[in-house]
Length: 240
Image (cartoon, rainbow, N blue to C red; front, side):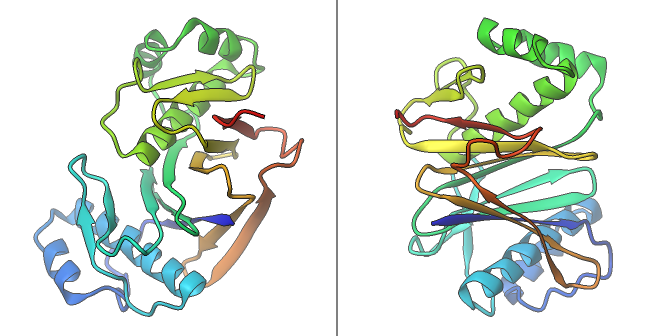
């Protein structure tokens, strides 16, 4: 079983929404311009990924959960998660009934005030791990993205005090009601991302859909490998 993380630079005015249903395009026309571009780019990327992985030519009907999380009306179709960071749009797709949660951040794009506010909400264990890293600010953003991805996977409103407890030093976390999930996060030169998905997923495929609408495979991560990468952090709720 695998998960697929695809990303694309935000498209303005040149988007070819060929695989989107007319109902969705009509709804997008009611949105403000900036939100409309993000909305259509994300769903076009999802549609292209569904074509590539499942051979589905038009994006199936979507609906929104009570917490604002989009998902397919047909529950037999795969779970997915959408995220934005700067001009980058990302989609995480989980195979074979797995759940998905995606968090993305631009590296070093947060003000000191934002960082201080976030650090106040962390546990003593999280703060100790952050302070032990070579770049504490980067490590704090990485945990932030990881928390966001896990909360998106659960489909619940953010409640970090009761729902989610991260223990990065031991490579574990606890998410109430979700005992068998994992998250993989990486820090790239400009983008920091975290993908949360079911523990049964053994591979994470990274894709880019470029400006010429071509697929470029960026990386194929073996999730259970001992040393995934220098800046990669993997946390799991599974007991071994």
